[in-house]
Image (cartoon, rainbow, N blue to C red; front, side, top):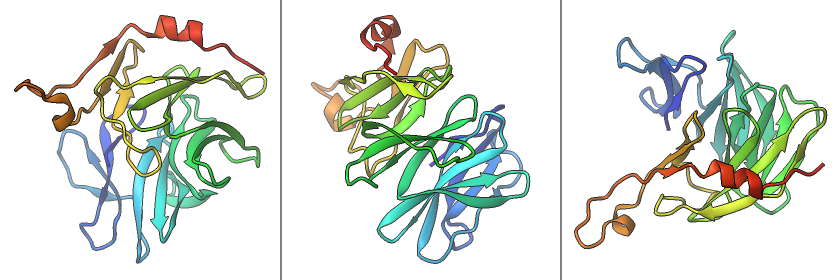
Length: 231
C-alpha cells in the first residue's frame, strides 16, 4: 500500500509488519537508507497509509480493527496521531490541504463525504461510491461509483462548499473493483490529460494479446462540458 510523500515525492510510506504489528513505515523512494516507523498498531488492528497533505505535514491513514475502519491523521512534526472520523476509510487530502474526502457507510450506504481540515464539525455527503481522490487543481473529485466504473464530480470550496452533477464512465479495461473493500488502482496525471491504471490479465488478454496498461487521452474538455456546477 505505497503512498508518495508530498510535496517532493522523495519518500514512500507503506504498510509493513516487519516488527510484528501491521503499521506504517516510510523510506527513501530510491531505496537508500533504512525504513523508519511512523505508527504503532494495536493488537488485532492494521494501518493503511492513504494521503499526504500537500505541505508534507500530515498523513491520513485508516485504522482497521474488528468490523469497521476509522480515518486517523498523523502529524509529522511530533509523530502523534489523532482520530479524524469513525466508520471511514480511503481518505484523500485536497491540494490546498484544507479538505479531506473519504468513504463511509455511516448512513448505511457506501458514500463519499468531504470535511474541512482541521475538522470543524461540518460534513458534506457528495456521491455514492468510494476511493475518492482530487484533481491536481482541486476542482474535481474522482471516485469509484461501482465495479468497472470511474466517476468525477465538480467541486467548489469558496466562498462555500458545493458540488455539481456527477459523471461516470466505463474504465475501458482498467481494473476497478467494488469500491467499499478494494484499493484504488488508477490515477490522473498532473497535466490532467492522461489516466493510468492496472488491467486484469484475464480480462485484457485475448487471442494471445499481451496484457497492457490502457491510457485514456484528452477527455477532460468534453468532461467539463458535461458536469455543470450547482450550489
